[in-house]
Image 1: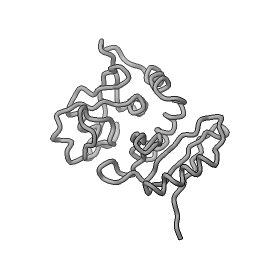
Image 2: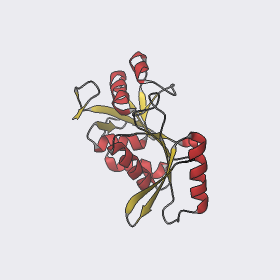
Image 3: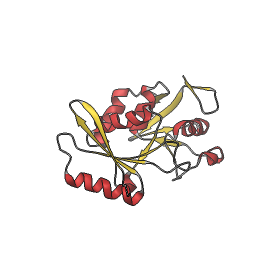
Image 4: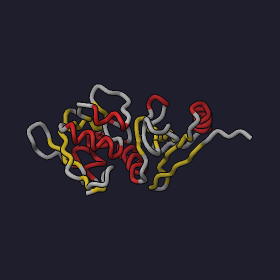
Length: 193
């Protein structure tokens, strides 16, 4: 169990695997889970602010990354359409199929989530993740995270891209790389004297 947004204990969310997404069938559970850490996306809604959540009559769908993370925390159980349990290994397999270097993509997601950050897609910024301190609609994402393919060295182009993008969007651009069996993060900010 985990301390919830309003102080109550939270556990036992239920999801159903549909394709490569996990749907939370209960609207109330969808609202609570979203408010707990901006998990999932409301069906048919793009950006939802916390104060709007209680007025929505929609389910959320979770990405395989989010579902795996919540299952590993013991907050979510997932079943298939027939009611049979979906294992962590099945969710991990979905992550592996959906994302190139899925294991590393998930490790990076978990790294930031475990430290209290809200992790969302960074696609519109040309990065893997946009990482928020509080959440979308509350603050702007102070970090954009880009994963360097394993086995590839960081190049001058990577550094230049990071510097230019961080200046353009006024964010810290983080390059993530696996080095000697651990995750290394290198942050770039545009600085003017």
